Image (cartoon, rainbow, N blue to C red; front, side, top):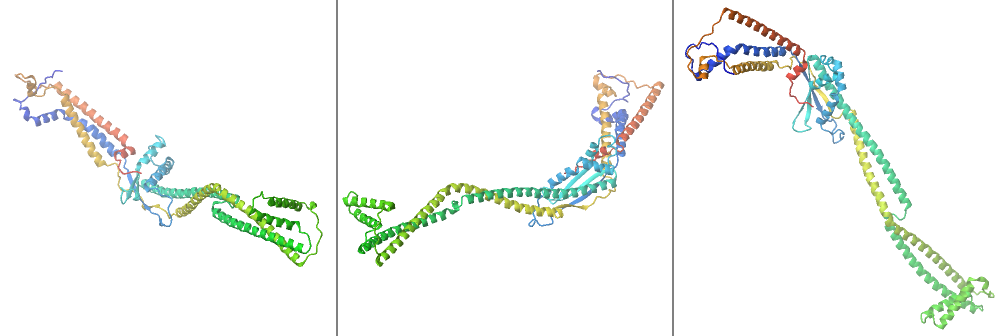
Length: 533
């Protein structure tokens, strides 16, 4: 596109371009001032109207103090041990639930512009954005140092805002009490169930151990030493009994020989029992000198066998004629009977001792087998018993903690400063918005003027034309205005002024309609950076 040429009057020689900076800006302002004014006026009018039409928003704050547990933890251990920040998040989720906020919105008639046009979810979301919590403590960098928190709410009516803020603070207090009591009760109930189950297992294992002890009484591992000691004692008694039997047998043989000799001396035959005893005594003496092949030993053994057969079979025994008993014979007979009685008793005692030794030996043999099973039963019983004792202790502590929470002696929230109606609005910040809108409008106007100058390819002075074509300029013709041109410029100016006025009015009306009562826009333009839980 070739540059166009306009009629201009350069007023003589044009100044040099290096020193014409201010003149160029002044010329540009004379040519583009109405464009810049209009471009600046339209957004400025709209933003000013919108800023002034925005509703006032008031904010109220309630300070809630976190009171620590009133009973020392050395006496009652609390069951609620989670950090305060985590519990505040949990309580906030409960309070900021849809059902809870919908009841508040309905109760105080909040967000009337949102409820008819949109669903209740939009009003709930907006209320969540309007609620802010600021944690306060000794050292915010350390968790668990929170000693208070500020609860704030923002809205168009200061009295309603204060009421809503205090209601929310009371919700936090009530929900904290319910949550702590619920957690303490749940902990106690859980431990109660676990304690009952542990007691049932303990009873079952105790019954198994008792049945095992009754079933294996005498062969338990802890009875091993007693069984060995008893077995040694029985073995000693058995040896003593055997020695006693040997002495009694020798005594019996001696008395039998004396009794036989006494009867012979009294003129009577020798009894078979006496003869048998004497032959046995003789056999023992001969065996000490000779072997069993010695003829006399063989003869005595045959005689002993015959006498034993006669003694065992009373029918084959030949009845000897009765002889008168002398006092010596009667004395020896009594002594012989007494020794035989003692010998019979000793043999009976030997059988009893051997039977008892067999019983204790069987117990000792069964002890290693029972020891493993008994140790397993004992180990399970001791483990369950220890668990039961720990659960009992924890259950008692949980009951104390539950009682403490029910009496509201645990950690609780307390309203330190109630929310009061604000005297001045906190939003929107009109002073800042006005400064920003004026700056942006001026920037838009200046930008429009610069853009128009950049896009304009025509020449406005002889110097511009001379610098562009590089040839001598012979003559310049000034602009000649006729009456028709003057009238046309006037009408164009009137139409343009009317359009600008209508545009300004339209922009102002649209901005007012859009901003009037628009709480969401006011919140958006003045949203703070306070921390939320």
